[in-house]
Length: 168
Image 1: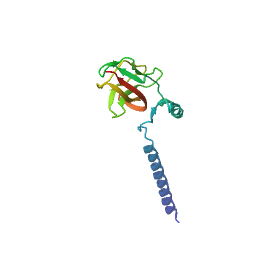
Image 2: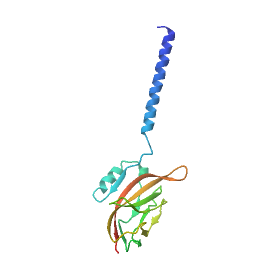
Image 3: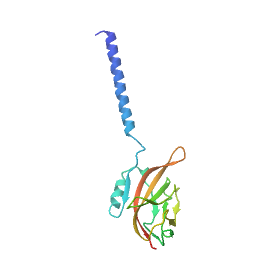
Image 4: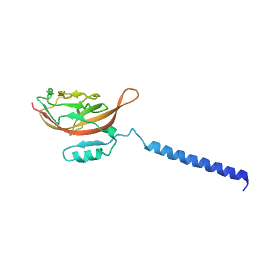
């Protein structure tokens, strides 16, 4: 083999090596999507400790505290529940938003905008008038990230069971 052929073979090997390396880097970047939603937990008395154990293994930044009651009692479908509350703990570093979902249909019965750290919402009035009865609902709480343009996006979330009672 002459010197020119060896140089050509070496150049082809270097180009092939760089192409393979570039493909590997692109594969890793495409599969490392930070926009994928975080794990959502549905917390109740039976799985509370297991979820705490699972969460202790995750990144500290995804943690948040919330203040809330889990029994909301409304005198009638259009009134406020004076004892109902939910809020963003002053111990948090990020804002939150909340949605109360009717378990049976997934309909949103109440939602907040972005709640800054330390905000408390109480009393609560539903966004929809409900007939008398007891309803199983889930309060979804979303930890928010502020984007460069000043808007917010969901970062992580947790769901809490709330018993909603409309008395009349």
